[in-house]
Length: 423
Length: 192
Image 1 (spheres, rainbow over the protein chains, first blue to last red):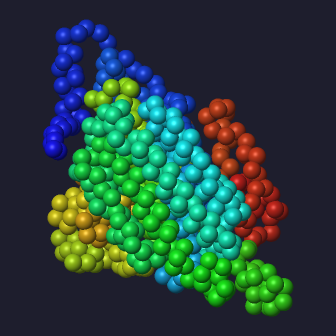
Image 2: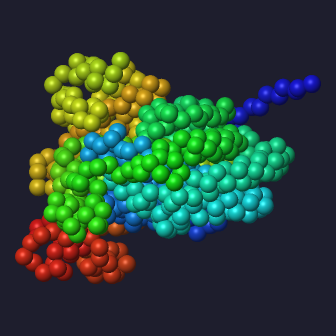
């Protein structure tokens, strides 16, 4: 017979107040503990200044910026195409998804985002979903390792290696892919790529099932995660969380469904949402998202226009010489193409004056690019709305009331990456 | 209900304070003529128009123009997905506008970032410290008159003392009569 058990999750503020009350009669000073910037559980260079009362956290002050490289300043000083390699280094666990997000943002500013060729859209969706799986796998592996389950880390890295191989086959680089171009892609996928993706889908589903067996009903894992880092719906919206962290709190919001771009409206997939908004819910949401990503991949390899080998010669780039570089053979034989190539390389794509914002559902949340153009090939201002930065801003309110040993669990469940947070 | 109708409601409520709405690429923007009222406008947008999700706050440096700063708010309704953009202009002498921290708590770090990068202050923000740069850093690096190469300083370790080794790197050069090294953006300032 099923047993129903109510779990009581007091909010962090009242938990903190209670902790302070309980300890009121104990004499002693609060201790300030400096965690990071170089700490294995902070997954990069995040520093948190914790104020402790015994083992209880009473105040947390996250300190970001150790990986600040001035990406927005750099973007103002180069053409739109030249910035693509910098997007690889934002969320460096999902470079393919960043490439797609950036290309779509510039294409929106150009007004050509709904004119992309169907084959390009499918390839981009596959890239995004592979990146999502890759990012979630690493986030999960590192999370589990911080909590004490090292095996998961080894399992997920085997699968990520296959994703790197796929990225290498498509773009030529395993890590810094720079696969997209404004108006299309660097090149079409190689003929056997779809078969490799099919094989990967099979192997990855097995691996996810294995991780599921290891963790989802594992007593230690569940006890460690459940009821920790509780984020209510109101708090998630107020802090503008995005991605799995928002959905873990029970808000049904996914840009792929709510503001469909590329060919997502032609694909069937579900958006998992959590119910309580604790660390365990965020873990479950990520697990389900990986399965849904595999589902999307499966549909894409079957439906891709032109087929796996593109026998129908479907184009991947839009046919606009003012946006996409012409083929080299034509540059050397035709005047018009030569001019287009010269203009694109020296001055860049001419983006008309105006403001556009494009938000993309990245593995970590909503990666947005706000482009303020005054015309020409260089943005006057480009703001990167990085999901990790915004997701981290909740720490100051989320941490108090927890034990110091809960910090790695909460950090792992938020799944951030500092390259993107600090830009 | 569309974003445009909501923008018109905003206009109906505040009258001349709101300029617009204008539409570009399917996005609705309005401008607030007096930046001192931005918190009131935002509170109305949240409470009455349902924009409960603050996507982003950005600042733009219109160097050489007056007013110099523009602060841009991206608002969204998380249930129906309607979005609106609110722009507020701030003059360089003032460089100050009210914080919207009381409306959306997410604005905390955004406002700190804008202060850090461009030096626009937010009144009513309880903790307006630098966030990406370190405490004690003397400049606002995202201003247009701050050169890409950094600025020389007498204090080693506080800011760059010489151009970083990327000089002559793969950045955009402007067409002019100057030599290649002087056209390269790391040595370029707004003045030259």
